[in-house]
Amino acid sequence: MIALLRTLMGVSVVGGLVVVVLWSENQMAVKTPAHIHFHAHARDSPENSPLPSLISIGKEVVTRKPTTATAAANVAELTRLSQTLMLVPNLHWLVVEDAVSPTRRVLTFLDTCTVPHTYLLGTASRKYKGANKPRGVSNRNAGLQWLKGHAKDGVVYFADDDNTYDYRIFNEIRSTRQVSMFPVGLVTRLGVSSPIVSNGKLVGFYDGWVAGRKFPVDMAGFAVNFRFYLQRNGPMMPYNVGFEEDGFLKALKINPEDIEPLADNCTKILVWHTRTVKSMPALKMPEKERVTKTNLHYLKEQIVFQMSHGLS
Amino acid sequence: MIALLRTLMGVSVVGGLVVVVLWSENQMAVKTPAHIHFHAHARDSPENSPLPSLISIGKEVVTRKPTTATAAANVAELTRLSQTLMLVPNLHWLVVEDAVSPTRRVLTFLDTCTVPHTYLLGTASRKYKGANKPRGVSNRNAGLQWLKGHAKDGVVYFADDDNTYDYRIFNEIRSTRQVSMFPVGLVTRLGVSSPIVSNGKLVGFYDGWVAGRKFPVDMAGFAVNFRFYLQRNGPMMPYNVGFEEDGFLKALKINPEDIEPLADNCTKILVWHTRTVKSMPALKMPEKERVTKTNLHYLKEQIVFQMSHGLS
Image (cartoon, rainbow over all chains, first blue to last red; front, side, top):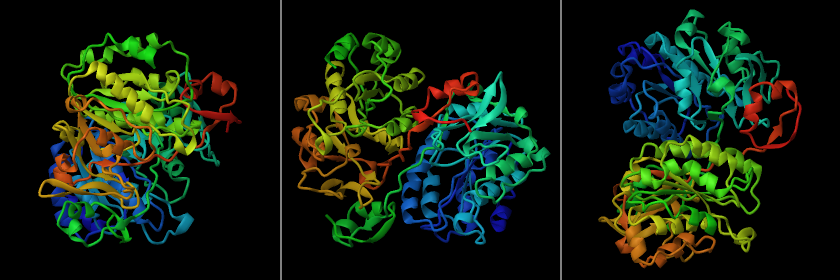
């Protein structure tokens, strides 16, 4: 991680909106040297995006033992999210992967991705295990750390790549002065997690899991002005399962009444916590001529396989 | 259905690309009179879209007894799909719902949808039940029937609203002269369904479920030129579970060797058969002042509820 950041130090400061997608995948990793990788994406570096605003999007990373099944849906999810981000002007996407080395399928995807982006590794420490392992924290913190070296202002937003975003939420987020909040659909048995707003002011929270949190909100339900974040000494996300959002927001030393409600005073759902059904790893293609000498040879590279199987 | 089509007869012929999303939802239906409904969307009728091409997208509809859980994810999926379609010029979207009357949440979504679209009802007959009920057929056929009255050419494509589409596939589809095909990812245990292509010609199929089909392909894996379709007497999709694609393609009287391979000779996956995890219906919001006198009152309208529950 440190070596990778050093490679990027030459990149100029981001003036505005940056998106971090906190991405995790440990499968199919290829040992691409870091400098080659970053070179490949330098054309999309913040230098080429004048005055972007600042957004951070985080991927809820896979469990401690990620399966190839999870990896299989990743390119589809990245494709879908990138197409939403294509509709948003002045946006920079930080794709942060929880992997020890860059992942081939992610690099291949980014090669033709037209959304201005930067790719980072945010590898999780091995000290957290099982249910105690906070998911996505290392990615988000790697994104925040990178922003501290490259951005002065803008708005940061953490999002998962399987969530659904109405692209209009990004335009709303842009106005965030300190911390803004808005409803997230399809969360817990309540179907929605939202601030409760009365007369334009936040007066409480409607969330299926309160658990003594000061800010019972979903990771996808708030955005932070980056200049304000720096003024509050730029805290990292805590490694505390279930309390990541709360710990981060408390560290920003804000009061609930200061929160800026978006989405028409939190009356509209513009973000949904959708999840993609994880398919099983595919059965392997046989080494027949029909595979090796046809288009199937190329498709093989795009599939996550488990074991060998006969051609039907 | 007949009455609704009659209402639409005044709409002028579509010149080009039309998308039909075959959509199904029986929940939350409101008794909106048909003429009011179609009036609301007349501004986006084909008349206002000069020379669109023609595409048809179909939703794999819900089971015989749709649950509110299915309905809950629908607006998120429609949002996501519409944002992909926003990237495609000259496209018309037919949203066809398997419902006896228009569904409020779909109408609300379409109110602000900027993709040129037409909304239809394609209610399934009650004679098919359980496992024998073909899903999405009534929707797709309603779309085809409508197109016969309104379109002369273009390209028709059937797609599900939970699939993932790389928007570039729609530009490829545009070139279809008769029937084109391309790989679909995340289908069956093989991880992909694709024509096998050798020297630019289709020589076979790689699909996890062949079952004696002449065309073992996924619904999302082919597109049809509408002029060619009309020349072949415009067949409907058969009510034959598992054999809808095969029956439809056979009725077009094409040979596998005539099929036009897209996506760089079927070497790229640009469509994925993703599925969204269906969440449980939400617990009902209590009738407290915090709900009735705050923003929660408006969010209530956007959630699919099951039963009453206390506010946390």
